[in-house]
Length: 124
Image 1 (cartoon, rainbow, N blue to C red):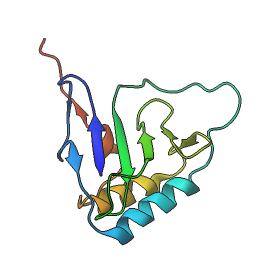
Image 2 (image 1 turned 90 degrees about the vertical axis):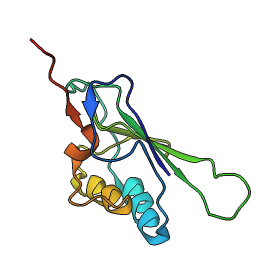
Image 3 (image 1 turned 45 degrees about the vertical axis):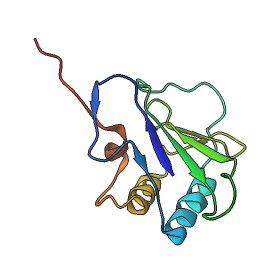
């Protein structure tokens, strides 16, 4: 299950805030890709502006009681971090991750920009 957290109404997205992935192979591909992402580099980092957009990915086996506790949090803005897999990882160098995630969710031509959304322009 993929759940978007984006407080306020300042961003527009082309897909629902909660999407349940029913294709087990696609979900496994996302999990495998997330585990293969590089660790966040050590040392001082200068990241672009980070907005409060994040995605919670919960992996579980349908039909079993309760849900798994495998929670992965993807932050596509700022330093583009992925947590919940031990070491903090980054999608900065893993462009294919967002395409796999989008495919699993049934989104066509998904990319990093799909998950960041479009910021609404403020009226002048």
